[in-house]
Image (cartoon, rainbow, N blue to C red; front, top):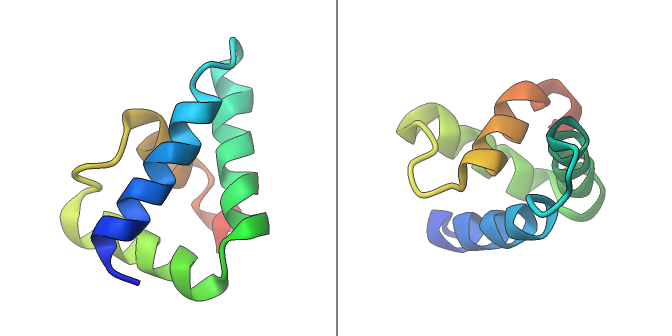
Length: 74
């Protein structure tokens, strides 16, 4: 799966969770969703993209969730 597809999918998840009033819980839930529903290859590719490109194109809430909960996503 290419980076553009992963970014689009991650941003859709972020759009859903960013409506939550508790931002900390939203970040946790984004990470939990990625861990639960994305296959390991997709999660590794997303983390690699963040490492190599600084997460450009990702919603801030998604980037924050990935950076804050990196270990849980792997």
